[in-house]
Length: 345
Figure 1 (cartoon, rainbow, N blue to C red):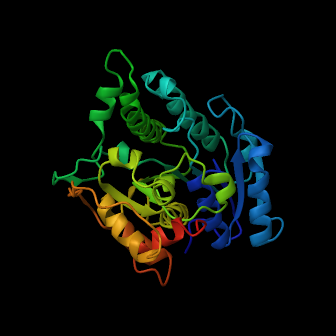
Figure 2 (figure 1 turned 90 degrees about the horizontal axis):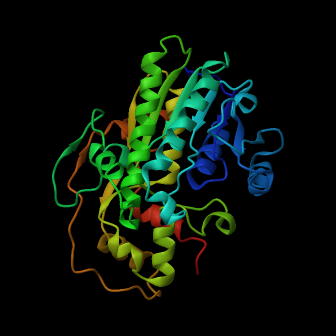
């Protein structure tokens, strides 16, 4: 039995984003109605058109929330919703480098978490809540180091580095991003702990690098998501990717399905769900890309073939198998990469 019945309204924030659009898609495919937030009507026009065409009218609607960190920002958008999937963030690691090298941006992110939780608490219809966190809320990638990632694992290393004294150099951006994700998720769990009568169940999904298809390449393939690591490699070879260390990948569609499960599965309660499919490095990516597109010219393998040796509990795979019949677990890397570059010739 689903925690909320099919046909219920689910609010998805950041509906035009790479992950957010897939979360909308999976909820609609599962038989739910969706209201998706965007910062402006112009940013959401293509989203409305996409889902109207795919699922018909009256299944998806837009709500404009221009300032997510303001009190009451989500009150109107949340009216009538049974579930809330908070995917949006006001901190993207590909944005202005100077601004994002300073920890001063982190309170903006945690404030957004407070605002949407306040709205959910004051909306009686809300029964389930899930927030997109990140692998970086648990740990930075540590290639060659064997360790176990647990639900009690937090990225204190990123917090300490982000809040260290100036100068705020560009190299600090990854730590600021990781600290923002860590402290945002901690803010959620603190809120849940401090408000015993919130009236809804909360969960988080922590994906590592999301690869997979762009629902609208024209509006999504230009940057701002980890899937562009793959499309950029296909077009330009190994450039900035050489500085991205080996870690886990996950198919963005599986990340979205885990958000759906965290809302509809009554057995998932107050959980951190780790969306870590399999470890990758750039040589494993290149090997599969050559297989997928044998006539395309790819760069040679990197000399450094180090791997991510961290261990993650397999709970997420069991969730996928239970809630999505026919799915045997995470989508394999080859299938994910093939979808990631489908729009490229």
